[in-house]
Image (cartoon, rainbow, N blue to C red):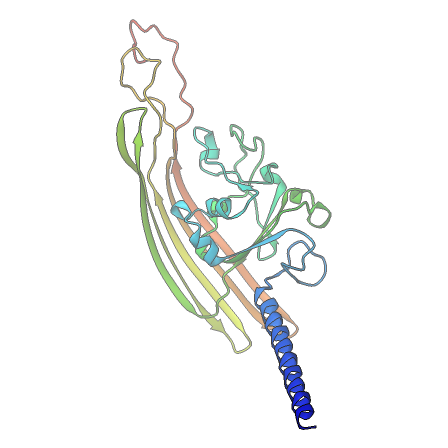
Length: 313
């Protein structure tokens, strides 16, 4: 009897430990599910879903993801190209106005078939119609680089057609940019970079494309019910680059008439985001402002003159 009782007691202890272990695993799994569930409202007509529960392919990019992308001179389009598998942001040269307002593509479709939202509201397109662009000729794309990376809290990207829900401008997908809504605190940052390139075509090592980026933002609470206002500014300065070789047309050697590379760009960005609860609703306001001065090289047109009189054209 003594040994049997001890065996029963040991079995009971083992059973209790097993149950506690199972409960601990269930609690841990539940905690992991809660921690991993990024909520998104893009691409659904019903309630908000987590990324894991969404029936459509949705990518959620945080502010940390955008900063770690290492985009040159703080270009939002370049950061998205680095992070998204089906987003392309070609760097064109000698393409007229497309050198200054670069067009983006999602899933290889036309730039005007990508719907861009800011805080869930439609973002306006640029005033430029790409009439001489290599990408999206005849379209008026959204200027991604007019939205500062420092102003963004997260980005939700729907990589699937959503024309039935959003309209024909969402055939390629939807990009929803959520602005920073932190009710307090601020941030100031500054970066500098340049290209140091060995160009075999001219047999030299050149340093060009010097660029600097300075950003600042701050926020404060509005009232006692969770209201806030947050805003910031950004200044970008980019020098030109040239990757062209020597011109083989002119009779005199050593000429570099053709230019292949980025132009000069000076950007000033301002933004704000605010919200105040009002009973069962809320009053909100947000906006962005971009002023850009750019210069770029157009396609070089060779002359049809007599080389005996004008060897360089």
